Image 1 (tube, protein in one colour):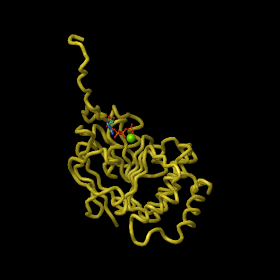
Image 2 (image 1 turned 90 degrees about the vertical axis):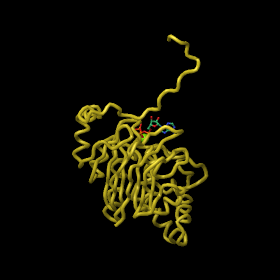
Image 3 (image 1 turned 45 degrees about the vertical axis):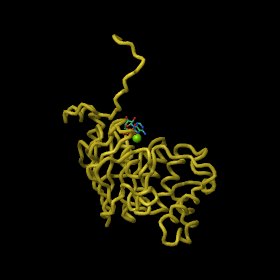
Image 4 (image 1 turned 180 degrees about the vertical axis):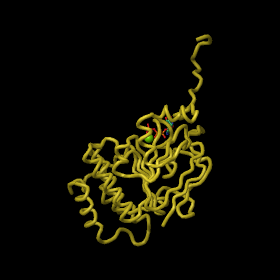
Amino acid sequence: MSRLEIRDLHAGVDGFEILRGVDLTIESGEVHALMGPNGSGKSTLSHALMGREDYDVTGGSATIDGTELLGLPTWQRAAHGLFLGMQYPVEVPGVTVRDLVDAAYAARGNGGAPSDLPDRLRDEAARLEITEEFLTRGVNTEFSGGEQKRLETLQLAVLEPKFAVLDEIDSGLDVDALRDVARRVEAMTSERNLGVLAITHYARLLSELRPDRVHILMGGRIVRSGGPELAQELERTGYEGIAAELGIEELSVEKPKEADPFAEPGF
Ligand SMILES: Nc1ncnc2c1ncn2[C@@H]1O[C@H](COP(=O)(O)OP(=O)(O)OP(=O)(O)O)[C@@H](O)[C@H]1O
Ligand SMILES: [Mg+2]
């Protein structure tokens, strides 16, 4: 059993604080859903966890089994068992999925990729209904939105991390792809105890992924947590309903506008 523990995480960009104290604990095999209005800091949380350079962590901690991840380079975080599926995957011309998976295994040490990797890639591709031709094309170049997400799920399945942060893995997926991807991720949680933080706007993903906990992020903080029924409540009331109930005024985190040096006084 492993534990991903986020404590009082503060992070932002250019001196502007976006995350204002996030606490979250995920155990192996659990699925946690993170929902929240646009601009509330969900993607910022995934970037801060993965160590994207343009995001500054200004306080708190994020550990896997007690090992501090913050401050480590991204590849070391991955080596400790963290995987990030991005809201907008990066296009890498000329680098195939196989190359990416090889590089990830090499970074972990332990002798690099397992010898049966080609077979596993092929099996996973079949399971996710990805034609083999996709395995030899540059990552995400000329892939449709849905194909990108299927390929990310394939990488997740082959790399076998301890925890996966999936940022809107359902965005742009048609209903069949959504079901295939969600079922594959769900199978990883039960077959090999993957812990998941699924960032999503839609309860539909959660009907397949069956979260243990649902958290709502507003204004850079988790303001409510509950069971799967919280996602249903949200569908009914919207974020505004929940904000009104909790007396929260700030739903998203917006950088204050800088004073316009050309503005004329009196306007
Ligand atoms: N690199 C950045 N530079 C400047 N501002 C940023 C940057 N990243 C995020 N922000 C701002 O921080 C706030 C939170 O953004 P974030 O992408 O984390 O929101 P989100 O909850 O993922 O929203 P969405 O549901 O639309 O994906 C937004 O106001 C956004 O404009
Ligand atoms: Mg986002």
